[in-house]
Length: 186
Image: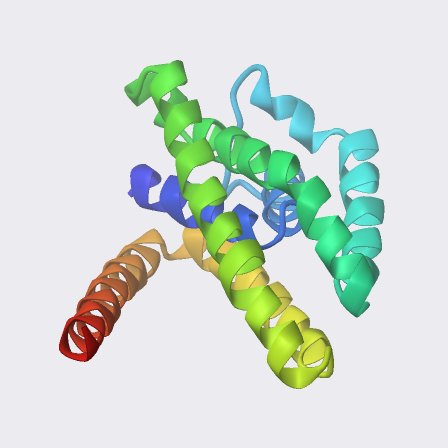
């Protein structure tokens, strides 16, 4: 179950670095749902929680402005994969079951992949096709998905695992259909 939570939290970080970190920090601080071991228990500190709250608010607003959201995505290219790596490694008991380097790399790849799809493929198309009008609703949807995925990853990791498998199947089928269309045109 912990590995499913780790993948879900890392994927969530690819959409928004600070929301899943904040969810984990708050749940670890105020509940027994998450037990963070050293050094990850530093995330329970009031300073970290406060910093993550401020950064979440800054990113929330920065991501809603068409020109600023692309600059924010460029900056987040380094932050989101790092957040995914930390979340994967910090997930309850995962760090003791999987080598730390492997867990950090897995989180980095998962969050980085989600971030690249979002910032290099999806968002520029939405901005171009809607003249920036679609940025706000899409950004809000990303925040809702990131929050929901983060909470579900901790509370119901099996649901997240099923959703991630279904999404992977859908992406493979979509790419397969797309490549067949290009082959027919060629």
